[in-house]
Length: 249
Image (cartoon, rainbow, N blue to C red; front, side, top):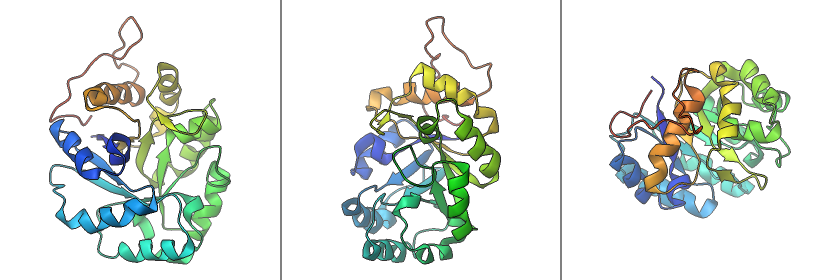
């Protein structure tokens, strides 16, 4: 079973409670609690124990994408009481001291980066990160890999080298300004080229959509990552599958 869900940041920025309500209204069973900016971090962590996450089969937490050394230390310390069942997603360029993160072992998931970042973009660059964090896992961002190389050869290399470490997949179109965008038909077709290499892990959408467009965006993911027998309408749009309690595939 492959779960499809959303990042709270894609749906409601820092308002994670609102995003959770949107997901629960649609019966979505996978969520990434996102705090990409430092001011968002401690409100999320402080509220974590009060959030009703019982309807979700998968919950991950995305750490801030930029941290000063003192902030990095405080973020790592704040994670001591976070349930071990929640994978921790981190950008490699946010790490200045690997010593803060080794203790988290396989709970920590390194995310591959897009073309604007200096590290973590390719298999070779990820090699150097995993040399420092040998027990860490991978959050494979297929949109980042596509932005680095639209031929998907970079994605192929990462998947060939690190498929067994993948815990979740980030899905979005990454535009020329390195911002997450909704999926286009051409990008979905590119993702299908490597879909067979992706293990059956949760697919987390980072596309910014309104509540009324959530189901359609999830249907795009089904088209991009399910076998090639997935339905396509003559116009080229993805055939609609009803959302609701059963959104896993």
